[in-house]
Length: 128
Image 1 (cartoon, rainbow, N blue to C red):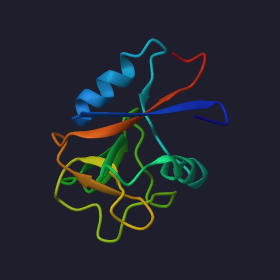
Image 2: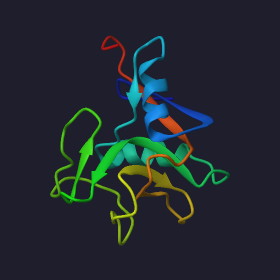
Image 3: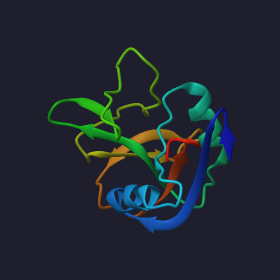
Image 4: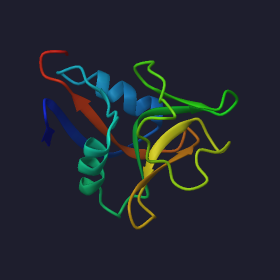
């Protein structure tokens, strides 16, 4: 799947957040977990998710002690920019963020990083 210059792939094998990140980095093209930083990318990705799996990892963490979210490239999620957290999220239930497909429209929710879930990788050609 491609949007603009970024290629995305959903993997349905169950991994923890950390295993999923390592699998994306270990691909031949050298990817990362997906980082849907804008509504167009977010809408594109969530349209591809199926309801068979409840969660899909992507590249965002939530530091509940600090009360802020960080993309896996180290960039903070700016509170005045786009985000798709579900109502009441993030909370103190975990430090890793996933798409939650149990809602009518898949939203972001945080949970334990050791949960096993499918995941979404991204690759920007020429940057791997």
